[in-house]
Length: 316
Ligand SMILES: [Zn+2]
Picture 1 (cartoon, rainbow, N blue to C red):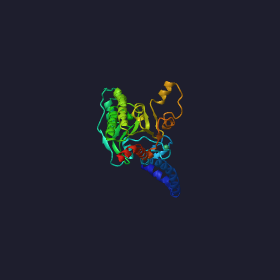
Picture 2 (picture 1 turned 90 degrees about the vertical axis):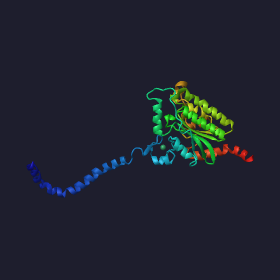
Picture 3 (picture 1 turned 135 degrees about the vertical axis):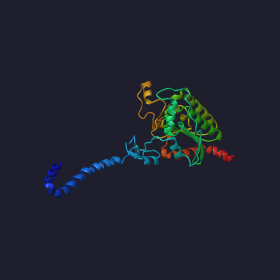
Picture 4 (picture 1 turned 45 degrees about the vertical axis):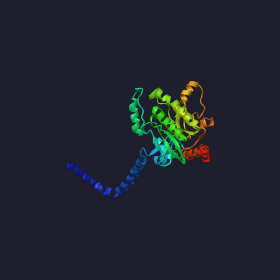
């Protein structure tokens, strides 16, 4: 062992040369060899997951913080990302004016639904991940100077599906608005009726519309706001019977999905079918309002729709 090390050292007579050559050799290659690697690695590390979101429309990477500050609207192409019910309420109502109703109402597995997972397990899972009890939050709030009933659906909870709880909470909200003489705003985002509750889900369509008929009879305004996506049982009931129907840009709105319609009608669907813009052109909705303009626009619509009531009140 020692001999071998000795021979190596004696070979180190070359060691004189390295003493001269290494400095440039050591400096130049290491700086060139290592730095580009470090640079490429550090660039990757600069984009940790969960801090950026890729916009599905313009494919730009947008900083999550920037997206949150912009009400989840892409600052480059104005694509409207989905927003949770709580964030939506926060962006609309006057601070500390939202009085939530029926906050603890939860669904029951009436049909003993069996599938890959039981309905009760599914509900528990979504209640944990979304911290919501069901797919809608309802309450009375102030929107600018107007006290009004507000219901906001959350697509993140089982696709915003309408089961007995969503239907019951909305019906109670509508009835409270009727008895309190309040205008009503419902913001929808839903895949339709909740299949886990079968017929009980479908009954909510008639129930919510029945309550809305009494609200209309009391000559109170109802503004329906459709966000991406509002489809099926929700679109076929309360969401499409507003005195004023507003949609967010690019929102998908319809009853059955485009593939089902295409298969049934055996007809080619026109471009832009079931988008908010297409439906505005064809008269199903009244206007398209971007999310950043939603609050001032809702207030101005409420100003207009309640002006008659205020005038009679002041005359009396
Ligand atoms: Zn974009």
